[in-house]
Image 1 (cartoon, rainbow, N blue to C red):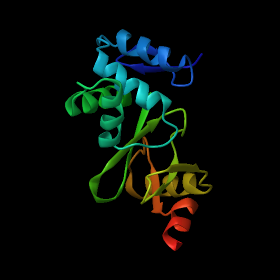
Image 2 (cartoon, helix red, strand yellow; image 1 turned 180 degrees about the vertical axis):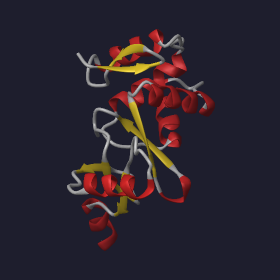
Image 3 (cartoon, one colour; image 1 turned 135 degrees about the vertical axis):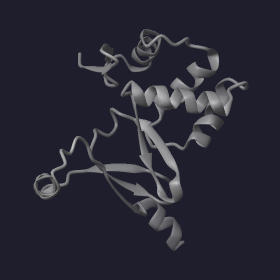
Image 4 (tube, rainbow, N blue to C red; image 1 turned 120 degrees about the vertical axis):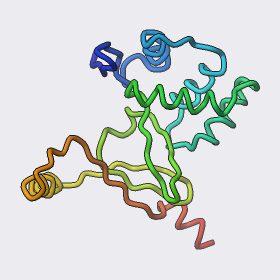
Length: 160
């Protein structure tokens, strides 16, 4: 079993334990599992694509009608901190959220229409990072590369 850490505390990685593992991680981080928070966890844990906070809110309300948008955002922030969910930026300042085990940290193609995110390898980027470190004196600690376009399904839909 692999672990993520938050404040020195070890939590199960997203791939270990599924929804139950997520619930244990939230409790270990000192948070209660209210019905609205559980609804958000269920939606995100079962999603196989990136979702906006509004989409998560709508789906969570189907499970528990009293789920508020503030609860959704707070829960998403917690899940990001725990390493269970990744936050990807989309155009116009928006964000989508997806399970961290679906896409390892790296590089993503994001559909402008349906927000589907696909990871892709990016060979040669390490050399660019090393060169930038040499030129600027920075120590690069993390990076992301997100390319935007239309997935094949949305391209086909547009053509019809």
